Length: 598
Image (cartoon, rainbow, N blue to C red; front, side):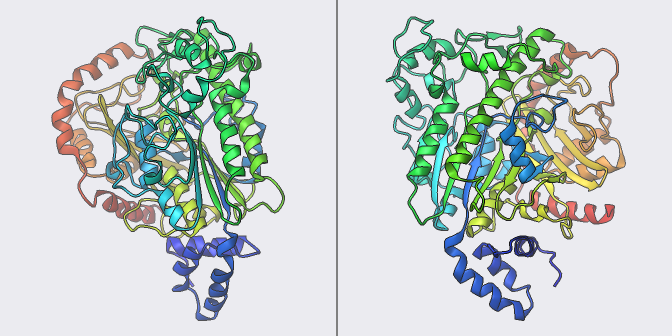
């Protein structure tokens, strides 16, 4: 038996890892054709006996959570997150996990549809997920799972939102039970409540009442602002600089001492309730999308006390914001994460996930990261590590304990892993891999190729990440109309095509551009569609290329160049749309490159 195919790798691993043979039926069926005949009877016996013993799945999904604020990097952020640290120690942590798109709705629509960004149904915020596309939630339902979705799923983000009861599109998306709302600031838009959380807060008393309003929704409309598309315009925050690239929120959420009504706490409590109401004898999936730590970083009085005076490193590569304000914003971000850690612990207790003999698999990850001032930017939408690189932890039966995986993975692979655990039927068009092959030392004949990208408004880039050998994991960025401004090591060359590359195995802050090296040029050929052609031919034709910059960064000039480049973007983008088969071709080239490197 040569377990080279991904299904056989997963199946053989799960058989070896689990003494009680909790192998999902779909994997067993996929593996049967590759097993010796003497083994088939054992697998058939297992399939018939194990359908009712499949694990519950708890997918915990903080919003806008960057990779190095996960409790495993105290030199970058000395966070007090004992629950996350315990999960990582008792499970497997993936140190090179990437989002398919560093923006809320695009990332979540990629995950829902199980497709890479260019094949996904939607490419910008403010739109509803097209219901003609299948979702992985519906696949879980067909596999016999009770699906629960709580929090900010972002699959109905148009002005109509989720509806006051959260039911808009819920059945069509594949949700059996739900409690849904919009962004933590968008929930306060409109004169009347637009989602379940807003409706509940309209019935709750205001704790601090600095606005003079009566109910909590009215008070927090004053605090957060009342415009669904604008962050930080309420009275609790102020813009950090004239570029409005971040906010310092020193006025507290108006819940006062009633921490249970803070938005993250409130949705966690609703998740616990829906777990308790799940039908007995049927496995469940809970996807809990916390609204934090997405900005604005408005925290409660007690959360503010928890971070008062604590030191945090200032941003990398930022001359726009004072060090004192950078540190204060990072304290607020830390307070949100530490509060989430406490809530995750409460949820693990409610689900019994940490109990001995538990049959619950836990996956913790995020939709995308947060620049947090790095590269002169807050937010996301950028090709740099703080935006695209996210935490990822898996824990539960069959998941190795204390394992650290440095091979690049996509958050799509986590969805694929869950589908396989459930025995859900896979669609041939999906781009989901799985985390399971990474639970063993030998990945087989292939090394994964991870894709990310975004085309919205003034941003257009595609990324591939590939582990070439034990010391080189290459991230290649193609910006056909120039990369976004802000990274002083890679000033924007708008409107020219721009290629950048970094060895992210060593370079965690995109500081040394190695795009002109042979190894980076090879990986660049794996970019999807015409992006490889645009950036490689642009560089060879003499378009400006950025090498490592030293000394004082010329950030203002970089922003000016980016602004000038916007004039050329629309005409170039039309030519750059990847055609059918582009991802598959890239994967095949990636396989050959991996074999050559080996």
